[in-house]
Length: 343
Image (spheres, rainbow, N blue to C red):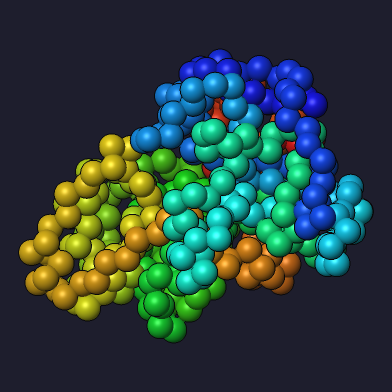
């Protein structure tokens, strides 16, 4: 079938790929409709790997997807051909950590577009029905492809243990940063500040009530936070850039007894945090790796209108222009938040 294939670093092709397989008894075949381009996809495209995950042979990209069920296995009761769905891209093994409910931490998980597992930017995929979720009639395919990144934001909000009325700061105004801010509001925060140096991306957040953008290229974020909170700081600090430059001073934004939630992953895997800074305020830290048990909640929040993901979709390209879409998303001058490919 036709697929978008990463042949090697900086080389993409749309070509036939022999990845067709039959649908099992507990699986569904899904015709892909919309696929979002994630930062990890761009990293594989530009650098050929992320940490230990190296692209050693041609790999189909894409893991943020929605589609239509076109075939269902004989044991599948909750889905049928014609159903509009989105799919959780990570399939865990029957491991101890999976049985404990933290299947996102399963070291043997098979995650789309993580070498050597092919992604979903192709005509159709076969997927376990247990990790395939029906979309309500009022949720579009484009919105359905945003469920995956929203699940990360919800995971972060859960880890933060938000109390009603808390204030928060999110550092980084990319897709994950904005969706984390929206998740924090949905989880009970009264106000969420979001900082970045990209004024165009920050402008998008002005569409949302109770998200307060801070342009770090024009003002000092710490001074602004302290002014807005009467010198107290925010109860929750979500770090969503992965930038090592932020870590050494991140504790300064937090209120006494607050919490720092690490969402962004540093490119080199390292970051210097002031232990003394944490101890002086008795700050707690939490970390996020993907998500578990968040898809149904994300779908409900989109369907109810409590979280509107549509303003974050910066551009939608037809499948035949997938390479152009990747080049646009990978351009450091781009102000795009989320670029999608539509089949």
